[in-house]
Image 1 (cartoon, rainbow, N blue to C red):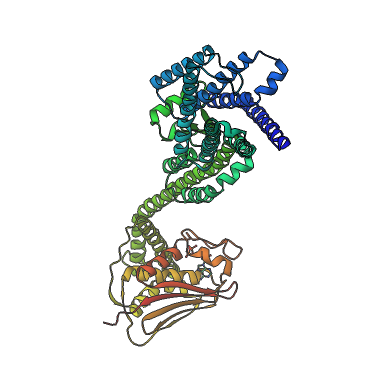
Image 2: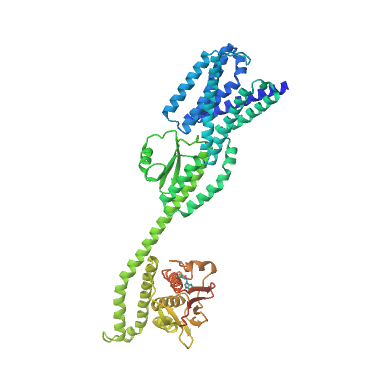
Length: 580
Ligand code: ADP
């Protein structure tokens, strides 16, 4: 049993020695006030455990060793309390009071001249000092155990786990000391000693984990939180409507990731894009400081417009910023960067789209006036109201009129497109015979159809539907014009109206260049044109089919396509019937 006990003693000494080396190295690498307190608390504890081997080297008088041990014991508790104070401030008065009490007890312990052996008899004064010393230590340690344990609830995973490990580690030590005090002579029982030693051995890794948890442990701790964070980032990146909103949401998570008290983002122009836990003015002042204090963490943002920064300010609850948190924050910043750029790009595209719509609106309205005059005079010329013209000139009049109609319908298309875009396209629906409307629309295009084999297949009876006559004709004219534009001279163009039980189908069939399957989805988009050898000499705006489908859908119908490259196309306009 004796060998087991001495093995345990050595194991504990080695463990504490390693704890001291580990915490010290870590502290040298990242010195800050919080770490300093914690490392001092742990070093004084280690010193206590290693006091006998140290003394066997130094051979100091027993009284000195006892006094130094007692003071180190007190200080190990005192520095833990200061560590707690740096996380959750105690306030200046309690801090001063506690410091004074610790100093008085330490002085009293030295004055009391404690005997060194465990069995030595003690004077009443010595007993009082010993009790005061124990109570002071237990309070210095007990309060942080409770407070840090409480503070760990609801904190980011790694931070919470570190605080819990620290609480648990110290709770183990308090338990060991209390058992040792109250066990008295039973302490000689080897089983109890082994049990105590085992608790102490478990405490060491806990203390180390709280001070400087290895990356693998941080990863395990943060795993449950990862999914939540991933989902949140995904949502915030996709659904934030503008940069300030995205930046504000991003800061909430960034601060949570590292447990910062406040955070803000500096945009590429140096302005504060968003702030959290700090006003925009304070953030601007902090950003203007020539040197940032140690307690801030700065992550550069490589924004499309220029460099920006995400700045996290630590607060009373912030644990020591570790490398793991910093690297996570950097990874997170990359996503935020992309998100911010995405939002500004979307904004720019939206502005461009708006500019295009405005241009369409202005250009079409400006051109409509002169075109009305041209068409008017052409019609008068053709009718002979302006006097006789030569037979040769007269022969081109129908084509000129048809071309001016084409320009007019193009302008009409542009005006309607900009109305649709602005949400100003309101239908004026009335019960109409779509056979008649289709016939009238085709009539205006007749001069363009002369070199096509044109057929209009229609039912003998009227087909009634509740449509906006002008808009319905726009669609028909657009489909027939396309059938002419994208087919060769001499080929057949057919317009067929087929009423079904609920709706009527209006097919516009050509034997033209056709449309490849992969190009078809693009046709119905705004400005969607297909650029290839077959279409390169045909001009157009790419608005017609988009507008036509939108109009069809506003009528609760649809516009669909059946086509194959090189084999012609069939566009089908589906319109619900009016059976009243
Ligand atoms: P555009 O003013 O360019 O004709 P549309 O929106 O009417 O605009 O048509 C979009 C594109 O669809 C056209 O550029 C053309 O490539 C293709 N397209 C439309 N109708 C036909 C058709 N009947 N046959 C072959 N291609 C067509």
